[in-house]
Image 1: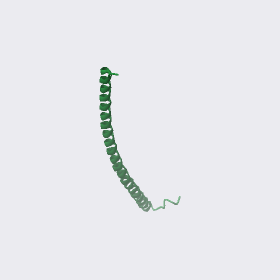
Image 2 (image 1 turned 45 degrees about the vertical axis):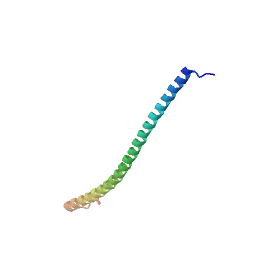
Image 3 (image 1 turned 180 degrees about the vertical axis):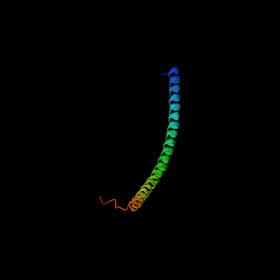
Image 4 (image 1 turned 90 degrees about the vertical axis):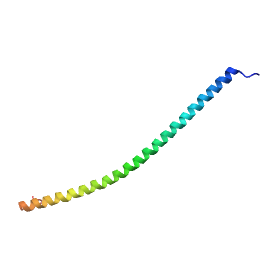
Length: 86
């Protein structure tokens, strides 16, 4: 049975298109993989920054508590009364 030149030509064209799409898909997958790696690094950096920020906020809260206690103590001395005794 002789080969059909039209069918052979169409099969070759389909094969080329398939290979082009496969190459494009591989490139796009590589780009996405690279972007995902970059995002992971950024998330890691943000996580570290959040941890440091939490520590600073805790320190600030403690400092505010100390300052508030000092203010209450100073005001109590000025007025001459204990604020805890109604």
